[in-house]
Image (cartoon, rainbow, N blue to C red; front, side):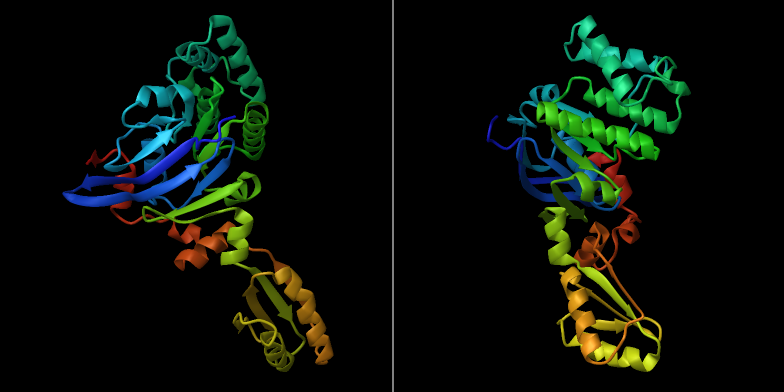
Length: 338
């Protein structure tokens, strides 16, 4: 397997003209992805994630900067890039008049598979993504979730070297989401497929991605494993409950001496703090409280999430930030390009 990056960008930037104003949708995107990685690209609506994917898949040109995808320049060799990648965007890609299974067969033929091979591949995807219940129905008769599953199947037909997924599991029920992820993991195991995806399901990124990139306002603001991001930028929330307000007052001082992190009160009888390595701090705090003659009636530790990471980076949670500014949606849609 090649050791060269499968994605390599340098200063990739995209500006849009919206209502005679310049909107900087993506600024100075510079990163590398190694073959076989599974990378989650996180951020609120309007952050620039979809614009970044559309540049990398040659659907729109960058304003400035360069990128190579699967060894080919996105500006100079777009056909070579497209032949080697799969892309599942946010909009339905199937032809409404065609039956779902026929769409898969034709997609295989488009990518150069013979009729028999295209038919076998369509049948494999129908089974693995649980499409059998509607495979014979026209696309226009499918529900939103069914169309989404078909979109994903269309992007997987040619078993691409690199698969881009833009919100692939949006609108899917839990079983369909599980089936989709199992197929993605099987692709990686059997073919070494590289996966680069955006998702609003933070638990998916946390569970499956080997690497998490966080984007906000057009810029990447963090890039590491989920475990390290949570350890370095967030922390476990520890809560201690006591029988009386007086005990809680004393406990705040005891716990505060164990960590530089601020200790706060929630209600009259609770002491709360957020600290890295809280799983080890919790038993130490209980021992210190016991030594001081203070008995906690309740003690809990809640591990950090990727939303906590975004909060630490930006001062707001990802869900709060998922209310785009007035100009940002236009930049992420079809607006005029520059």
